[in-house]
Length: 349
Figure (spheres, rainbow, N blue to C red):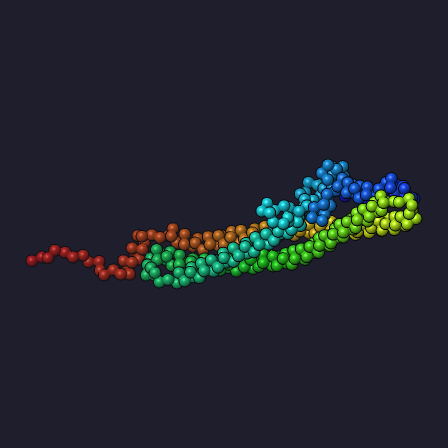
């Protein structure tokens, strides 16, 4: 927010301080009240982070979006999110991090899905290969027997197709998903620790500001009391007490300014790192989605290839089925198994 404390202390320098009587005319408790008023006028504090009031926010050019029309992470996750269940509020960065962690979990589950598909394909391949060696209907003869034998061979060929599909799924889909997820996890952990440390530093600096503010208020109250107790008969003694109280109040004000400066530096650092880190999380999310999209496209490509190869295994069967001829089969069978062409005749006496 705009430097209310600097404005305050520059304006408070107009308070007369040359004599106790001047001080009595302008009680320094006004400084404490003015500090609270100016601070509240310019900004509010939410979990140790200062924000402009909504009433003055439109007038501040620094509140313009960093990446307009892009719905970028760096523009929409500065304040903490209240939990409707009453638990402590969740920081904006934590919301972003949970989104990334959810994406990582979804990627893991996708890899598990592909792993299950691989198991199914492996089992299917084994069963097809076993079925192709079955002796069932092995004694079928003729053109139908040839078609039947080709159908069994096609089961073996199809088993090979599904085995290759399984191997390619593992190498070209499952493995890339898991590899990217592991790298993704390392990146998230690094950013998480960095931002948490900066937020802790910011909270510590804010506590320092509050402590210094309280000390200043106490010093100002002490100065006001001494000023009100001014006794003309003991002017010299009271002047010394007031000067001492004023020095302590001034020192407390300097300490407060110093702590405010440290806080603003910490918040500035946190702000810069939040922008950088949120953009990195945005980049990682884009990479994750694009990577999964490419993996799933590879999955569909392999499925199309599998369908094409499976189709090629049944084409010879189709061709032989078109050649099946019951009359031809009967001819071949009769020629091989006939017992004689002479037919019986009536008995002649």
